[in-house]
Image 1 (cartoon, one colour):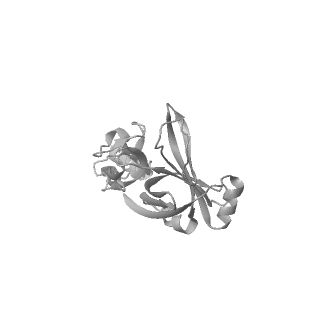
Image 2 (cartoon, rainbow, N blue to C red):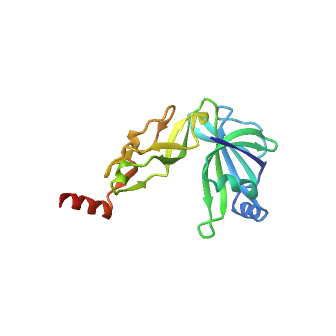
Image 3 (tube, rainbow, N blue to C red):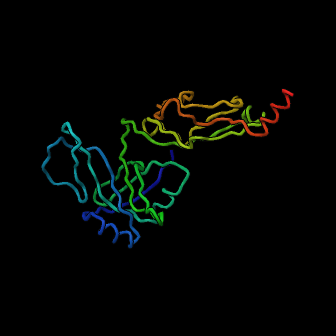
Length: 217
């Protein structure tokens, strides 16, 4: 997985009105969800823009509110690659994170908000990884069409074990056959998608039907 350097500034004022004003200044509101450093209930002083949200069982999430410059995140958001974000927030420190969620305007498609998830060396994460097909499928040679049904797959692993892409060899994929999630095995990765989900397939085309009819005739 590639790395991306990103700097942010803490924000203490939250809400729609404040967020709208920030966007006009070229800033994107963001949140980092991380592991709470203390047991709950907790009383004390946190850094700027930090709060703890209880999730039950005496545990909680550390939520950091900050902003990033829109021109800084453009190459991170609009990219075919996946990244480990080396995030530095002024007054808070340096952290490693991945993108958890993105919010876009329903009409203009402008980026409105970014949710990050802090990652740790020994704690597995779930992440979507792009799928790449390699090889010339047998079914395509017979007149079929290769279809990629799932462009990304969800995997669970330590962040440093997650590859930039998942490569699937389809050379032996025959006409009318498919590759399902259960057929895949990548070292160090646990597949999260439904096992019977179809990742790619070679479907019969009109040309292939004509070839089959010619053989039968």
